[in-house]
Length: 251
View (cartoon, rainbow, N blue to C red):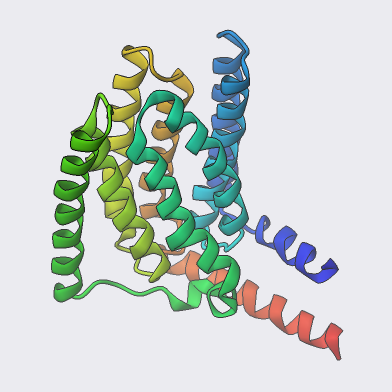
């Protein structure tokens, strides 16, 4: 357990500086949002969820596998928030993240070890499968949630769900093309939670959270090891040295 806690602590270190700046910017925005509205169990839970959620996406940006625990904890908060807003597919979206990203990352030893060295890119076939799968999930989920629930925004909810589900799967498969989907997901979620806020179904914190996610996704194309070759090489070197030090300590 001690070594595992040390491993998680290590996963929070060595991120690009811009990631830390974005986190504290997000934290400041969320604190201001929290104190400028009635304090309720839902707003507090939303604040906790958005804070952990931003840490989670920043960890993915930095190619650090601590996103597993951060994702599970933030998902619990967002499921309650989605239920309160009747954005039912946002609940399934969080469950999809847990199923495609968080639990596999926590259980897969190979995914956690020097993940930056395993990044890959789409082929033409991969693009076709990803686009077709996203469209199919959108049509099926939009019809299903509109037919069988009282979701007031089924098709907006559905596009956010479909893109986010595809992004989670692409991320777990270690394709850097995930960030095309993450940017689309951030835009779709901003629309969803802004409409929900205007209709009185959610707090502004969720819209702000989605905008921070979008900033993170744009940032990924510049400084993240998913795209930045120099940063990837630095991280691979760092993780290799860390693994070597653990091996020496074990002997």
